[in-house]
Image 1 (cartoon, helix red, strand yellow):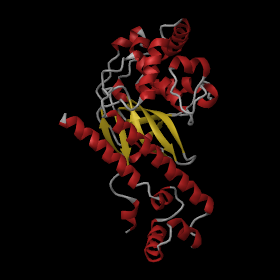
Image 2: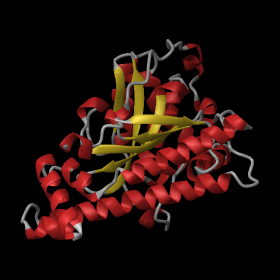
Image 3: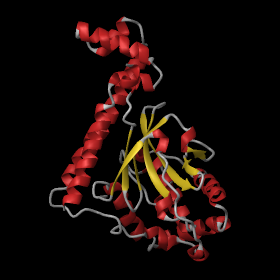
Image 4: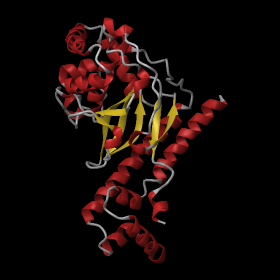
Length: 315
């Protein structure tokens, strides 16, 4: 019990750290709207005048008004997400049996191709930091109802006539990728899934954020997290073990919106499969995504910036 409490308090502390580091000035520097030297100057001025930082930046013409507004929107969306996750994780501690590793049925294993059952992958050598962040792991998946609910609906869907038709065609496509090296396999799966129709959840399901099953995705299309889920299940069907796969929720700092990608841990490091980018990329080469959390059936990981903050480096 003490171990569970310690794990949960550690996650909540990590969430508070994310919120503290989403200060306006640091976001302006991270987005390239402001230099560390300019931020230091503005903070010194703020101590003297007691004005809001945004007013100082505009008065001194250090930033454009539209860039300031973009950073404010980004700050608001990140803080909102952190607040919602904090509430959900806190609520999960009150009289609710947590959804822990092993309690979510491995539905992708039912999709697995017969000959892929004998595929053996070596254990992952390590888990390099995603997009340059630090990460904290938790095995309590209870807060992630969209993820766990997708598995429950997927289990029911594969037993239907429509689900069986989708599985037949899907497996027929995947059969061509059996036995390929992992690097080639993820390229092929990425191309296959990215060829599906993109449609936002509000038009597709009448909801602002719906995590569709692969059966729903191949039937009616989907948005970013549906592409990531379909890639995840496709690779699991080809024998790629769970420990090498994570669906990652990131903040797209160019568009200032949340986004979802699949991360695959290869022997050469983590690779990103993205419906917005045609080719598979190493996560180390992608700089406009800031990971918020990543998840698979085994656990979820909270991602935070390293302890060295922009403000500290400016001093």
